[in-house]
Length: 470
Image (cartoon, rainbow, N blue to C red; front, side, top):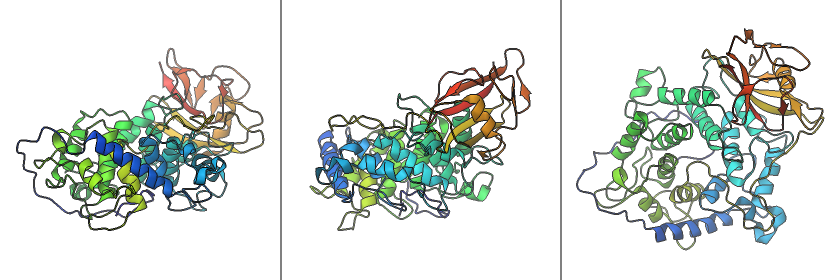
């Protein structure tokens, strides 16, 4: 049974197979109508609101219901509007932001998926993930798990899901203005690794398959295929791409004609179907037409709606269940509402509540982190989280690079910078000097690259990219 904690999971090595779908003439329309979808969203939101604790929380230190934020946003409900008994001081967004800001969160032994999960849900809740607080930058936290020995992987490569959800978080959680905050070189490195792990049958599973013919030949998993599909698409791969087409074919081969469900590893269930549909949604592939409308006139969305209890709004995990499941309800609602694995936060209905909350400046004396990539133009991309303690409300690129030389995770992001102090154009970095039109350039939060200078102003939460080239 899939759980949206996306913590490292054991490799899946088997899956239930299904006979080929009969490709007879398809009906003209899917059975889940716009009115049914609207009702499903309304009732689903009501059920997720009922999961809020009396203190306003959805999340604690461990496995919890915080994925409700991505489902609520997909259904058009702002987290700041979700309150226990109308107490706006305990609104879900503020309580979640306070949790993420605590030094003890997520645990004494965190893993990369903790930060990826938080990034996706903070974004959906209207919390800028790189500016959660004066000390918390979730994007920088993810960068700290970059694997120098296997560029493009985040966290141990054996836990492939950590890399997939890095792509989902870093590509899906855009800036407040809607721009891609990470450089294309980093997105490309993630795309390369995800492609290399695609199984022979067109899908993926939670464990690493790259370079392992046995794993590549293993049957794929419905859940991870949905997540990997979404990861490719939010990283910029078009839905006409060959690998996307092959993944669609794998999902299509698992359709149950009579119900529209995908026959997953653990059989037909809401969570697996929700992940698959969210993957299709993220790629702009309609799960109610074409390949996903069966000969019996059923679709995956149609199946999900049959899993919902109405008017209470909760979804059951298995078709045979008689009570709703919180996780199934989150997965089901997100998918039916047309969401991927995160969503742009809706404009709040609460008077005076902003769409976004974010730390706007550094706090002098409060240790923090920044996310940094260094691309030497020769295929040697480095990513790291830079730890430093600001002395003012802003800092400079030179100060960040100086800190990176001794306080970066992983190390090796910056080994030297010229000039090493003061101001002026950066003429060399990591031993590579400017040469003619090929010079070091800097971009912030996806901005255009411009000449890198030591005095360039860096603000709280900026995602910094350095690139050598013309």
